[in-house]
Length: 439
Image 1 (cartoon, rainbow, N blue to C red):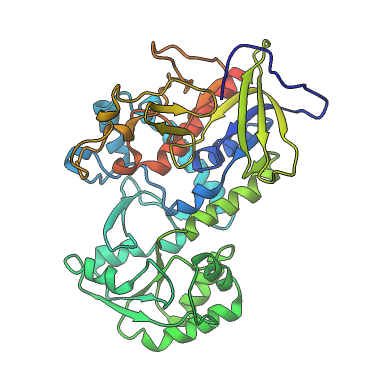
Image 2 (image 1 turned 45 degrees about the vertical axis):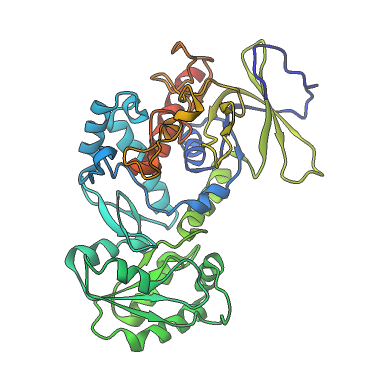
Protein backbone atom coordinates (compact mmCIF):
# COMPACT_ATOMS: atom_id res chain seq x y z
CA UNK A 1 0.00 0.00 0.00
CA UNK A 2 1.56 3.22 -1.14
CA UNK A 3 1.28 6.85 -0.29
CA UNK A 4 2.67 9.99 -1.88
CA UNK A 5 2.10 13.48 -3.16
CA UNK A 6 0.51 12.57 -6.47
CA UNK A 7 -2.78 12.49 -8.29
CA UNK A 8 -4.87 9.61 -7.02
CA UNK A 9 -5.02 6.98 -9.80
CA UNK A 10 -8.75 6.53 -9.33
CA UNK A 11 -11.24 7.86 -11.79
CA UNK A 12 -13.20 10.13 -9.50
CA UNK A 13 -16.86 10.71 -10.16
CA UNK A 14 -19.83 12.37 -8.58
CA UNK A 15 -20.31 9.16 -6.61
CA UNK A 16 -17.10 9.73 -4.66
CA UNK A 17 -17.81 10.45 -0.99
CA UNK A 18 -16.40 13.72 0.31
CA UNK A 19 -15.86 14.66 3.94
CA UNK A 20 -13.79 16.84 6.22
CA UNK A 21 -12.39 13.94 8.26
CA UNK A 22 -11.75 10.29 7.48
CA UNK A 23 -11.10 7.99 10.46
CA UNK A 24 -9.48 4.60 9.96
CA UNK A 25 -10.25 2.08 12.68
CA UNK A 26 -13.35 1.10 14.65
CA UNK A 27 -11.79 0.10 17.95
CA UNK A 28 -12.05 2.25 21.07
CA UNK A 29 -9.73 4.94 19.64
CA UNK A 30 -11.52 5.17 16.30
CA UNK A 31 -15.00 5.13 17.81
CA UNK A 32 -14.00 7.77 20.38
CA UNK A 33 -12.38 9.93 17.70
CA UNK A 34 -15.57 9.81 15.63
CA UNK A 35 -17.63 10.74 18.69
CA UNK A 36 -15.39 13.70 19.55
CA UNK A 37 -15.36 14.86 15.92
CA UNK A 38 -19.15 14.68 15.64
CA UNK A 39 -19.53 16.73 18.82
CA UNK A 40 -17.40 19.43 17.15
CA UNK A 41 -19.59 19.38 14.06
CA UNK A 42 -16.93 17.88 11.78
CA UNK A 43 -18.26 16.05 8.73
CA UNK A 44 -16.82 12.57 9.42
CA UNK A 45 -16.55 9.18 7.74
CA UNK A 46 -15.51 6.20 9.89
CA UNK A 47 -14.21 2.95 8.39
CA UNK A 48 -12.91 -0.14 10.12
CA UNK A 49 -13.40 -3.53 11.68
CA UNK A 50 -15.34 -3.65 14.95
CA UNK A 51 -14.27 -7.15 15.96
CA UNK A 52 -11.63 -5.94 18.41
CA UNK A 53 -14.34 -4.32 20.56
CA UNK A 54 -15.43 -7.84 21.48
CA UNK A 55 -12.01 -8.32 23.05
CA UNK A 56 -12.40 -5.34 25.39
CA UNK A 57 -13.17 -6.17 29.02
CA UNK A 58 -15.43 -3.13 29.28
CA UNK A 59 -13.44 -1.46 32.07
CA UNK A 60 -11.52 1.71 31.28
CA UNK A 61 -7.92 1.74 32.48
CA UNK A 62 -6.08 5.03 32.89
CA UNK A 63 -2.87 3.73 34.42
CA UNK A 64 -2.68 0.65 36.58
CA UNK A 65 1.04 -0.17 36.70
CA UNK A 66 4.07 2.13 36.89
CA UNK A 67 6.89 1.45 36.64
CA UNK A 68 6.36 -1.84 34.86
CA UNK A 69 9.86 -3.04 35.73
CA UNK A 70 8.76 -3.36 39.36
CA UNK A 71 5.07 -4.10 38.63
CA UNK A 72 4.11 -1.29 41.02
CA UNK A 73 0.36 -0.82 41.32
CA UNK A 74 -0.88 2.73 40.89
CA UNK A 75 -3.38 3.88 43.51
CA UNK A 76 -4.09 7.36 42.11
CA UNK A 77 -4.03 7.16 38.28
CA UNK A 78 -3.79 10.94 37.88
CA UNK A 79 -0.69 11.19 40.05
CA UNK A 80 0.56 8.05 38.31
CA UNK A 81 0.24 9.71 34.91
CA UNK A 82 2.25 12.68 36.18
CA UNK A 83 5.04 10.32 37.25
CA UNK A 84 4.80 8.38 33.99
CA UNK A 85 5.14 11.52 31.88
CA UNK A 86 8.14 12.58 33.95
CA UNK A 87 9.79 9.16 33.67
CA UNK A 88 8.80 8.46 30.05
CA UNK A 89 8.57 11.82 28.23
CA UNK A 90 7.96 10.09 24.87
CA UNK A 91 4.86 8.26 26.13
CA UNK A 92 1.69 9.40 24.28
CA UNK A 93 0.20 10.66 27.56
CA UNK A 94 3.05 13.16 27.71
CA UNK A 95 1.62 14.87 24.61
CA UNK A 96 -1.45 15.88 26.61
CA UNK A 97 -2.22 18.07 29.60
CA UNK A 98 -3.70 16.17 32.52
CA UNK A 99 -6.83 18.31 32.23
CA UNK A 100 -7.20 17.22 28.58
CA UNK A 101 -7.01 13.54 29.52
CA UNK A 102 -9.63 14.11 32.20
CA UNK A 103 -11.89 16.01 29.78
CA UNK A 104 -11.63 13.19 27.23
CA UNK A 105 -12.59 10.46 29.68
CA UNK A 106 -15.35 12.53 31.29
CA UNK A 107 -16.86 13.36 27.90
CA UNK A 108 -17.05 9.71 26.91
CA UNK A 109 -18.44 8.58 30.27
CA UNK A 110 -21.14 11.28 30.06
CA UNK A 111 -22.18 9.94 26.65
CA UNK A 112 -22.33 6.35 27.93
CA UNK A 113 -24.43 7.43 30.92
CA UNK A 114 -26.83 9.29 28.63
CA UNK A 115 -27.20 6.09 26.61
CA UNK A 116 -28.21 4.08 29.68
CA UNK A 117 -24.85 2.49 30.45
CA UNK A 118 -23.30 4.56 33.26
CA UNK A 119 -19.81 3.98 34.62
CA UNK A 120 -18.60 4.39 38.19
CA UNK A 121 -15.34 6.04 39.22
CA UNK A 122 -13.77 6.77 42.58
CA UNK A 123 -12.24 10.20 43.02
CA UNK A 124 -8.52 10.18 42.37
CA UNK A 125 -8.01 6.45 42.82
CA UNK A 126 -8.19 3.18 40.97
CA UNK A 127 -10.58 0.35 41.76
CA UNK A 128 -9.70 -3.31 42.11
CA UNK A 129 -11.64 -5.88 40.11
CA UNK A 130 -11.48 -9.63 39.72
CA UNK A 131 -10.42 -11.06 36.35
CA UNK A 132 -11.91 -14.23 34.80
CA UNK A 133 -8.96 -16.28 36.08
CA UNK A 134 -9.22 -14.96 39.62
CA UNK A 135 -6.38 -12.44 39.64
CA UNK A 136 -6.80 -8.83 40.76
CA UNK A 137 -6.56 -5.86 38.42
CA UNK A 138 -6.48 -2.11 38.99
CA UNK A 139 -8.69 0.00 36.76
CA UNK A 140 -10.27 3.44 36.78
CA UNK A 141 -13.84 3.28 35.48
CA UNK A 142 -16.25 0.36 35.76
CA UNK A 143 -19.59 -0.18 34.04
CA UNK A 144 -22.38 0.02 36.58
CA UNK A 145 -22.88 -3.73 36.28
CA UNK A 146 -19.46 -4.31 37.93
CA UNK A 147 -19.69 -1.49 40.47
CA UNK A 148 -20.16 -3.57 43.63
CA UNK A 149 -17.23 -5.89 42.98
CA UNK A 150 -14.55 -3.61 44.47
CA UNK A 151 -16.66 -3.19 47.62
CA UNK A 152 -16.84 -6.96 48.09
CA UNK A 153 -13.05 -7.14 47.89
CA UNK A 154 -12.24 -4.12 50.06
CA UNK A 155 -14.80 -4.96 52.78
CA UNK A 156 -14.25 -8.73 52.50
CA UNK A 157 -17.97 -9.32 52.30
CA UNK A 158 -19.28 -12.89 52.17
CA UNK A 159 -20.15 -13.47 48.54
CA UNK A 160 -21.71 -16.12 46.33
CA UNK A 161 -20.00 -16.60 42.96
CA UNK A 162 -22.17 -18.21 40.30
CA UNK A 163 -21.36 -19.91 37.03
CA UNK A 164 -23.27 -21.97 34.49
CA UNK A 165 -22.65 -25.40 32.96
CA UNK A 166 -21.64 -25.02 29.33
CA UNK A 167 -20.06 -21.57 29.75
CA UNK A 168 -16.46 -22.10 28.70
CA UNK A 169 -13.53 -20.17 30.09
CA UNK A 170 -15.30 -19.13 33.29
CA UNK A 171 -15.18 -21.07 36.54
CA UNK A 172 -16.41 -19.71 39.87
CA UNK A 173 -14.40 -22.42 41.65
CA UNK A 174 -11.19 -21.38 39.89
CA UNK A 175 -11.76 -17.74 40.84
CA UNK A 176 -12.36 -18.67 44.49
CA UNK A 177 -9.26 -20.86 44.57
CA UNK A 178 -7.13 -18.09 43.09
CA UNK A 179 -8.49 -15.52 45.57
CA UNK A 180 -8.15 -17.72 48.64
CA UNK A 181 -5.14 -15.80 49.92
CA UNK A 182 -6.91 -12.46 49.55
CA UNK A 183 -10.52 -13.20 50.46
CA UNK A 184 -11.79 -16.39 52.00
CA UNK A 185 -15.43 -15.45 52.17
CA UNK A 186 -16.51 -16.75 48.76
CA UNK A 187 -18.90 -19.60 48.11
CA UNK A 188 -19.66 -21.06 44.68
CA UNK A 189 -22.80 -22.15 42.89
CA UNK A 190 -23.35 -23.74 39.50
CA UNK A 191 -26.87 -23.66 38.08
CA UNK A 192 -28.26 -24.14 34.57
CA UNK A 193 -28.87 -20.97 32.62
CA UNK A 194 -32.64 -20.58 32.00
CA UNK A 195 -33.72 -22.39 28.86
CA UNK A 196 -30.27 -23.76 28.09
CA UNK A 197 -29.14 -27.39 28.33
CA UNK A 198 -25.96 -27.32 26.23
CA UNK A 199 -23.13 -24.94 25.53
CA UNK A 200 -23.61 -21.35 26.70
CA UNK A 201 -22.47 -18.30 24.71
CA UNK A 202 -22.06 -14.98 26.56
CA UNK A 203 -23.65 -12.80 23.88
CA UNK A 204 -26.74 -14.99 23.56
CA UNK A 205 -27.05 -15.16 27.36
CA UNK A 206 -26.89 -11.39 27.64
CA UNK A 207 -29.52 -10.86 24.96
CA UNK A 208 -31.74 -13.48 26.60
CA UNK A 209 -31.60 -11.63 29.93
CA UNK A 210 -32.96 -8.50 28.25
CA UNK A 211 -36.22 -10.49 28.34
CA UNK A 212 -38.21 -10.21 31.57
CA UNK A 213 -39.24 -13.88 31.66
CA UNK A 214 -35.64 -15.12 31.44
CA UNK A 215 -34.35 -12.94 34.26
CA UNK A 216 -37.30 -13.96 36.43
CA UNK A 217 -36.29 -17.57 35.98
CA UNK A 218 -32.69 -16.75 36.81
CA UNK A 219 -33.74 -14.85 39.94
CA UNK A 220 -35.90 -17.79 41.02
CA UNK A 221 -32.94 -20.14 40.62
CA UNK A 222 -30.61 -17.85 42.59
CA UNK A 223 -32.97 -16.99 45.46
CA UNK A 224 -32.78 -20.24 47.49
CA UNK A 225 -28.97 -20.12 47.55
CA UNK A 226 -28.34 -16.58 48.80
CA UNK A 227 -28.00 -17.60 52.44
CA UNK A 228 -25.54 -15.41 54.33
CA UNK A 229 -24.07 -13.90 51.18
CA UNK A 230 -23.92 -10.10 51.19
CA UNK A 231 -23.56 -10.02 47.38
CA UNK A 232 -23.69 -12.26 44.30
CA UNK A 233 -21.07 -12.30 41.57
CA UNK A 234 -22.08 -13.47 38.10
CA UNK A 235 -20.27 -13.69 34.76
CA UNK A 236 -20.68 -10.55 32.66
CA UNK A 237 -23.86 -11.53 30.82
CA UNK A 238 -26.44 -9.34 32.61
CA UNK A 239 -28.14 -7.89 29.57
CA UNK A 240 -27.04 -6.26 26.35
CA UNK A 241 -29.30 -3.22 25.92
CA UNK A 242 -31.23 -3.14 29.23
CA UNK A 243 -28.51 -3.60 31.83
CA UNK A 244 -30.08 -1.19 34.31
CA UNK A 245 -33.39 -3.04 34.16
CA UNK A 246 -31.71 -6.42 34.43
CA UNK A 247 -29.66 -5.37 37.45
CA UNK A 248 -32.61 -3.74 39.20
CA UNK A 249 -34.91 -6.74 38.66
CA UNK A 250 -32.37 -9.33 39.81
CA UNK A 251 -31.28 -7.35 42.87
CA UNK A 252 -34.86 -6.72 43.92
CA UNK A 253 -35.67 -10.41 43.57
CA UNK A 254 -32.68 -11.83 45.46
CA UNK A 255 -32.36 -9.03 48.02
CA UNK A 256 -28.59 -8.42 47.78
CA UNK A 257 -26.30 -6.46 45.43
CA UNK A 258 -25.21 -8.21 42.25
CA UNK A 259 -22.08 -7.54 40.24
CA UNK A 260 -20.47 -8.87 37.08
CA UNK A 261 -17.04 -10.39 36.63
CA UNK A 262 -15.56 -10.14 33.11
CA UNK A 263 -15.58 -13.38 31.12
CA UNK A 264 -13.16 -14.74 28.59
CA UNK A 265 -13.81 -13.80 24.98
CA UNK A 266 -16.13 -12.65 23.57
CA UNK A 267 -16.63 -9.94 26.16
CA UNK A 268 -20.22 -8.78 26.56
CA UNK A 269 -19.20 -5.43 28.16
CA UNK A 270 -17.04 -4.78 25.09
CA UNK A 271 -19.93 -5.70 22.81
CA UNK A 272 -22.20 -3.32 24.73
CA UNK A 273 -19.78 -0.47 24.01
CA UNK A 274 -19.70 -1.48 20.35
CA UNK A 275 -23.49 -1.47 20.14
CA UNK A 276 -23.71 1.97 21.77
CA UNK A 277 -21.17 3.45 19.34
CA UNK A 278 -22.80 1.78 16.33
CA UNK A 279 -26.15 3.33 17.20
CA UNK A 280 -24.94 6.67 18.54
CA UNK A 281 -22.48 7.69 15.82
CA UNK A 282 -24.83 7.54 12.80
CA UNK A 283 -27.41 9.46 14.83
CA UNK A 284 -24.79 12.18 15.31
CA UNK A 285 -24.17 12.38 11.56
CA UNK A 286 -21.09 10.16 11.27
CA UNK A 287 -21.12 8.09 8.08
CA UNK A 288 -19.98 4.66 9.19
CA UNK A 289 -18.66 1.77 7.13
CA UNK A 290 -18.17 -0.96 9.70
CA UNK A 291 -16.41 -4.19 8.71
CA UNK A 292 -14.92 -2.43 5.68
CA UNK A 293 -11.21 -1.92 5.13
CA UNK A 294 -9.06 0.75 3.52
CA UNK A 295 -7.06 -0.81 0.69
CA UNK A 296 -5.37 2.27 -0.74
CA UNK A 297 -4.50 5.79 0.36
CA UNK A 298 -2.96 8.59 -1.66
CA UNK A 299 -2.61 12.33 -1.35
CA UNK A 300 -3.89 14.62 -4.06
CA UNK A 301 -1.94 17.65 -5.27
CA UNK A 302 -4.43 19.91 -3.46
CA UNK A 303 -3.56 18.23 -0.16
CA UNK A 304 -6.71 16.17 0.22
CA UNK A 305 -6.61 12.44 0.87
CA UNK A 306 -8.06 9.90 -1.51
CA UNK A 307 -9.03 6.51 -0.04
CA UNK A 308 -10.31 3.29 -1.52
CA UNK A 309 -12.57 1.34 0.85
CA UNK A 310 -13.31 -2.32 0.22
CA UNK A 311 -16.72 -3.50 1.48
CA UNK A 312 -17.08 -6.66 3.56
CA UNK A 313 -19.31 -8.11 0.85
CA UNK A 314 -17.14 -8.72 -2.21
CA UNK A 315 -20.15 -8.39 -4.50
CA UNK A 316 -20.51 -4.70 -3.57
CA UNK A 317 -18.56 -1.93 -5.25
CA UNK A 318 -15.59 -0.21 -3.72
CA UNK A 319 -16.13 3.16 -2.08
CA UNK A 320 -13.98 6.17 -2.96
CA UNK A 321 -13.58 8.83 -0.27
CA UNK A 322 -12.02 12.29 -0.54
CA UNK A 323 -11.12 13.84 2.81
CA UNK A 324 -9.46 17.03 3.97
CA UNK A 325 -7.87 15.28 6.95
CA UNK A 326 -7.44 11.76 8.30
CA UNK A 327 -6.92 10.12 11.68
CA UNK A 328 -5.25 6.72 11.85
CA UNK A 329 -6.66 4.57 14.67
CA UNK A 330 -6.10 1.17 13.08
CA UNK A 331 -4.54 -0.48 16.13
CA UNK A 332 -1.52 -2.72 16.27
CA UNK A 333 -1.10 -6.24 14.94
CA UNK A 334 -4.54 -7.60 15.87
CA UNK A 335 -6.26 -4.54 14.41
CA UNK A 336 -4.06 -4.88 11.29
CA UNK A 337 -2.65 -1.41 11.67
CA UNK A 338 0.81 -2.94 11.90
CA UNK A 339 2.17 -5.95 10.06
CA UNK A 340 5.27 -7.87 11.05
CA UNK A 341 7.37 -10.19 8.91
CA UNK A 342 10.98 -11.35 8.80
CA UNK A 343 12.10 -7.96 7.52
CA UNK A 344 10.47 -5.78 10.13
CA UNK A 345 7.26 -4.03 11.12
CA UNK A 346 5.38 -1.83 8.69
CA UNK A 347 2.32 0.37 8.90
CA UNK A 348 -0.31 -0.95 6.50
CA UNK A 349 -2.21 2.08 5.13
CA UNK A 350 0.18 5.00 4.62
CA UNK A 351 3.49 3.11 4.80
CA UNK A 352 4.55 5.37 7.64
CA UNK A 353 7.85 5.00 9.44
CA UNK A 354 7.52 2.59 12.37
CA UNK A 355 9.58 3.06 15.52
CA UNK A 356 11.01 -0.42 16.19
CA UNK A 357 14.19 -2.21 17.28
CA UNK A 358 16.83 -2.12 14.54
CA UNK A 359 17.30 -5.89 14.57
CA UNK A 360 14.53 -8.46 14.62
CA UNK A 361 16.52 -10.43 17.18
CA UNK A 362 15.98 -7.53 19.59
CA UNK A 363 12.18 -7.63 19.43
CA UNK A 364 11.89 -9.95 22.41
CA UNK A 365 13.80 -10.52 25.59
CA UNK A 366 15.11 -14.06 26.03
CA UNK A 367 12.93 -14.39 29.15
CA UNK A 368 9.32 -14.73 28.00
CA UNK A 369 8.05 -13.31 31.31
CA UNK A 370 10.58 -10.45 31.41
CA UNK A 371 8.91 -8.00 33.77
CA UNK A 372 9.82 -4.74 31.95
CA UNK A 373 8.27 -6.20 28.79
CA UNK A 374 9.55 -6.81 25.28
CA UNK A 375 10.81 -3.99 23.02
CA UNK A 376 8.40 -4.98 20.24
CA UNK A 377 5.51 -4.05 22.51
CA UNK A 378 6.57 -0.41 22.32
CA UNK A 379 6.91 -0.37 18.55
CA UNK A 380 4.54 1.87 16.63
CA UNK A 381 4.03 5.28 15.05
CA UNK A 382 5.89 8.17 16.65
CA UNK A 383 4.00 11.48 16.62
CA UNK A 384 4.68 15.13 17.35
CA UNK A 385 2.84 17.27 19.91
CA UNK A 386 -0.15 17.51 17.51
CA UNK A 387 -0.34 13.72 17.04
CA UNK A 388 0.95 13.95 13.49
CA UNK A 389 3.09 10.92 12.48
CA UNK A 390 6.73 11.87 12.10
CA UNK A 391 9.57 10.53 9.97
CA UNK A 392 12.90 9.20 11.19
CA UNK A 393 14.09 12.79 11.70
CA UNK A 394 11.14 13.72 13.92
CA UNK A 395 9.41 15.88 11.31
CA UNK A 396 5.67 15.50 10.59
CA UNK A 397 5.10 13.56 7.38
CA UNK A 398 1.80 15.26 6.50
CA UNK A 399 0.12 18.31 8.00
CA UNK A 400 -3.35 16.74 7.78
CA UNK A 401 -2.68 13.20 9.00
CA UNK A 402 -3.00 12.31 12.68
CA UNK A 403 -2.74 9.08 14.70
CA UNK A 404 -4.21 7.84 17.97
CA UNK A 405 -4.63 4.72 20.05
CA UNK A 406 -2.54 1.60 20.45
CA UNK A 407 -0.70 2.12 17.14
CA UNK A 408 1.31 4.89 18.82
CA UNK A 409 4.91 4.16 19.79
CA UNK A 410 6.65 4.43 23.17
CA UNK A 411 3.92 2.74 25.22
CA UNK A 412 3.09 -0.76 26.41
CA UNK A 413 -0.59 -0.46 27.18
CA UNK A 414 -1.00 -4.08 28.21
CA UNK A 415 1.67 -4.00 30.91
CA UNK A 416 0.97 -0.42 31.94
CA UNK A 417 -2.79 -1.09 32.13
CA UNK A 418 -3.64 2.11 30.27
CA UNK A 419 -5.36 0.84 27.12
CA UNK A 420 -8.75 2.51 27.43
CA UNK A 421 -7.40 5.81 28.69
CA UNK A 422 -4.71 5.87 26.01
CA UNK A 423 -7.26 5.24 23.24
CA UNK A 424 -9.74 7.83 24.48
CA UNK A 425 -7.27 10.57 25.43
CA UNK A 426 -5.12 10.39 22.30
CA UNK A 427 -8.25 10.32 20.12
CA UNK A 428 -9.37 13.49 21.89
CA UNK A 429 -5.96 15.09 21.36
CA UNK A 430 -5.83 14.11 17.70
CA UNK A 431 -9.33 15.46 17.01
CA UNK A 432 -8.50 18.69 18.80
CA UNK A 433 -5.40 19.17 16.64
CA UNK A 434 -7.32 18.16 13.51
CA UNK A 435 -10.05 20.69 14.30
CA UNK A 436 -7.52 23.48 14.43
CA UNK A 437 -6.09 22.32 11.10
CA UNK A 438 -9.53 22.32 9.50
CA UNK A 439 -10.17 25.82 10.75
